[in-house]
Image 1 (cartoon, rainbow, N blue to C red):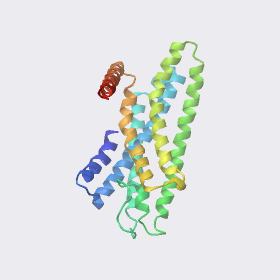
Image 2: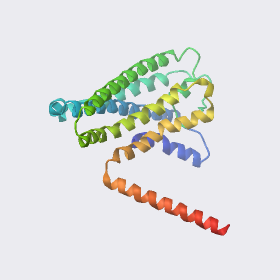
Image 3: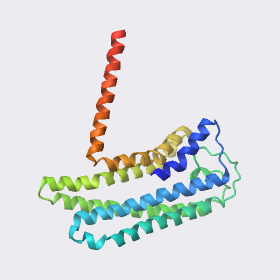
Image 4: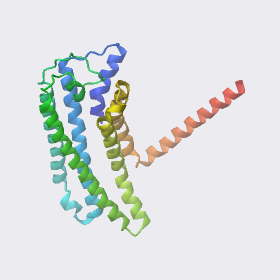
Length: 254
C-alpha cells in the first residue's frame, strides 16, 4: 500500500506544485511497472488470504499442516513473482508500441489505457490480448475468493455459540472489506459505460482506484486494534465538539 501511493502521489504533487504535467519516458515506464507490480501482487495476496481464512475457519485442525511457515513463504513468493512477471510483460509490451498520436496523457499518472490511446491503430492488438488474458486470470481469482467466502459463511452459520460466530466474522471482515474496496473501485474504473465517460470523471475514478484503497487499507486492517478504536472515538468526539462550538458561536454572532 505504501509502495502504491509512493509510485503515484509524490510525482503528481510535484507536478501540481510546479504547475507542470511533464514526466520522462523512463519515469513513465517505471511508474507503470511499479504500480502494476504492487497492485497485481496485492490481488494475488488477497486471494491467498481468502484461502487462509477458509482453512482457519472451515478446517482449523488442519491449519498447521496446510498453512505452515514454509507454505506461507512459498505462496507469498509466488504472489510477488507472479506480480513481477505480469507487470514486466505489460510494461515491455506497452512501451514497445509506436506512439503516433502525440505524447500527452489525459491522466495524472501513467496508465496503460491512456498510453494505448496514443498508439497506432493496429499495433496495440498484442497488448489487448494480454489484457484479456489478465482479465481471465483476475476473474478466476475473484471466483476463488467468492467460493471461499461461501464456504466460510456456511461454516460460520453452523457455529452454535454467538461468541464463536462473532470471532469468525471479525477475522474475515477486514479482509472482505479490503477485497470489496479494491475490486469495486477497479471494476468501476474499467467497466463503467462509455456513455458516462468524461475526462473529469475518469480523473476522479482513477484517484478512487489508485489512491483511496492503499490509503484506507491499513486503517481497515487496524480496526481490530482496541487502542486505535479508542483513539478514533476520541478524535470523532473532539471533532464534533469543535463543530458544535463553531456553530454556536456563529449563531451567537448572528
